[in-house]
Image 1 (cartoon, one colour):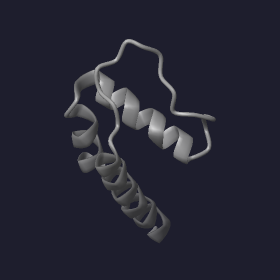
Image 2 (cartoon, rainbow, N blue to C red; image 1 turned 60 degrees about the vertical axis):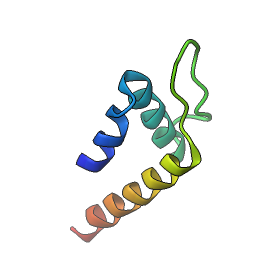
Image 3 (cartoon, one colour; image 1 turned 45 degrees about the vertical axis):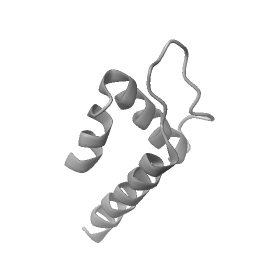
Length: 65
C-alpha cells in the first residue's frame, strides 16, 4: 500500500487523482479514466505498469489471508 501511495503523491493531487481513477477503472467501478481539465500530470505507460505490478501484488497478499 505504501508503494502505491508514494507513486500517487509524487505528482501531487493530480497524480493522486489520476492513479485512483486508473485503479477504479481497472476494478470496473468507473467506465473510463477520463478527468476534467485543468490538470498538470498524465499517467505515463511506465508508471501505469508499475501501478499494475504493485496492485497485483496487493491483490495476491489479500487473497492469501
